[in-house]
Image 1 (cartoon, rainbow, N blue to C red):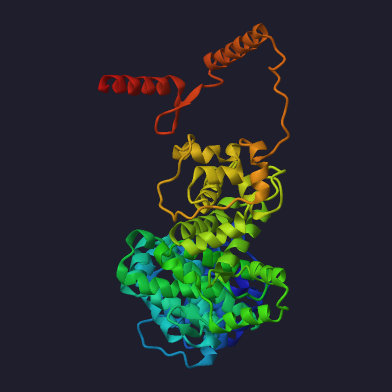
Image 2 (image 1 turned 60 degrees about the vertical axis):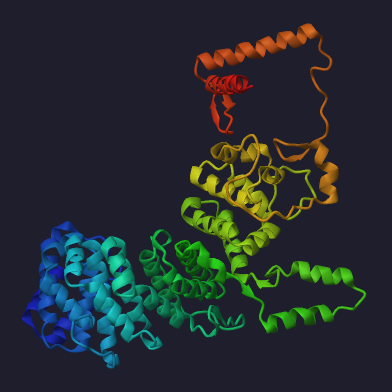
Length: 560
């Protein structure tokens, strides 16, 4: 009934009446996302009628009402089939200031029309394959970039930027060819980076360092939404950057990484928005070539150094212990470098672990990022090692028991999701400089067995990557407890009586044969397969391992 009345008025052609009826229709169906199939033809005709109104010279308020209803109707994919034509798309492009004409953005009264047109295009492109093909034909990506350049430094049109970026994100998501066009032909990387700079109001103090005002106001909701859309679009543009990175791109990637560092150190209007902002920043950092991530840390500024010195000077000269405590508790500084961004990433990772769900989507990106940063940048690795794996003192509990970051990560090493447990184990392994003995000290053999088996390191040794040779120092508490630590569980155990000490030789032989028969039965029923270590440290069926060792012995004998 609503569609019939609206269609009748729209066909009649009086602008004031059209505006009123469509405004009423929009108010009633604003939250409608599912439509009755019986009225499908009427909705199609209403869409066609609205496009006929939009080509006429009607007031701006009437255009907005038409576009609002068109946006609502475009949620229905079936309605879009007959109305998604090149002519209709061009009408929306003209209203959104995306035509080939050199339209300016001076008339504030036109802004609502531009925003609603962009919203309609977002829905139509997302729901219609025909619209997606027409977007390529009409070179929509280039038009969106041109519109972004017009409003790049103008904060009062954030809504236009936000929906322009959302449409750009959708196009680059749905068409891989557009990603390449954005990256190289349209210079999307510097353009979108500048959009982020504008949203964050960044003031550069050095080539890759920005001024951070920790006491400043949070981002506004509009600035936050705009930044999130820019981050998502940049992710698509740079999704394959780690494969095709060129030296000439290093500067641009470092600038982007510096902007993302700034992003990590500011907050949004709410805790949820801050987490969403940081989550998208983490995803984008994963696309940055690891050699350019060194800008995430920077030397302490003169003000920061002076402030730290002042804090120490305020303590009495005889309070040496308290001075050491101040230095130790300053978790944002390491080796003269500002580690705020890395600390934020570590806190973000711990929050995602504490959520206890969606580990693959929510946790693995930040874990992978921290792993690669640690592998490539010594200061980051050593800072994270101090935070995650501090020197062991109390080893009475198992490594997976407790509430520290180390305990949480060790628990993930035996997670049911293979990808999650692999990246958690890899992160700890890299923090231990890929040395098996160091990893086992913090995790126990049982928790680390999966990683060591996959890397062929069950027999010990170290990984393939090179790290500095500085040695870990054990605490006195650990040294004293070490002889009684169970290597499998990784914690201190009281010496247990040996059950075979009181057995006779006949009893020992009986129990040994009983165990052999049980294992033989399980093996023949294929419930258990005996495994052995090959010379390279990887696991293989026992027969194959024994054959390889026999071949090695024969070769050695022949050589002698």
